[in-house]
Length: 411
Image: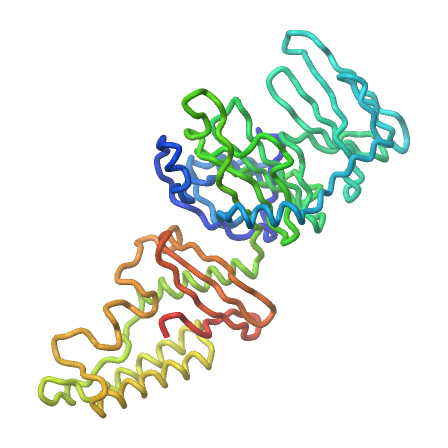
């Protein structure tokens, strides 16, 4: 079992999973063409005393959201970061491969063992976490490096972690990112502070992060940043490591963001699988010279009633939808818009304006990626996509305790 596992609960909501693709070796001049693909899977969850091993790879969508950012964005976040671990040499002293910790109640000694066997152990004091009142000690063994958090007051060990712990700016979450030369993948653990009893381990089967912990950090925006490179591309032809060239921003998703994502997915599932009355159907009784002269207002009323009954929309959106029907009808009657029988409606432009698409995925839950552009107590703007190229923007408004669609890009 991995030593640091993560809490499963309402705090970590919404992983926007990315479908897997086979890893391929590419030429150096093609590296920048790689896109976000199989960045993570979850291979284990622990809830209380029960451990659940998931069939690999298991795509989970209720913890975190990953996205690539530019190097400029990464650099801006890096230079404005705040390191929660401070040197504090008065609390710890390195003596070669041994360490003395000056805790409140006693002095704690970690004595290293220097030989060529598996018992070889080297200790190093790495600093103090004031928010947790914990001292960080690096423990380098024969084949691995671990990090121990020691309670500064009692001198007792709190946790043993697989990589340098990174405490969030609000002191609520610990992240550890493990990237080892002995593996072909990186892994991340995220835990609610001081609670390692239940959780989730996230593994990147084909991605590696930089080995130095200084390149991974919490940004002032509350997101976690780290550089990556595809595992099969990290060694060049001469056997040297390539530098990481892509930069990932990992955000913990709140219950509010999960509710927004659920609304988007529920709407499109309804639109494509359950909707009965289509939009802006012309009246067959109004045809003059093979042209429709007005809408079928009986169908239009049924369509508007059906939209209202779903609870997906604000009153403002429903009013705008009705006004669009009125405008289309006026244009047909005046001849400003010509709609010939047997042809596509001139107001459709060849795509479904609810999604700017012609097709939809079979598994809406697995295929829909939702990104929060902006959010406050009253409203939100989100962008969703089913692939890397086509994206669609929706504005939401809070009505009571619920989120509802207020505007859509296609309208």
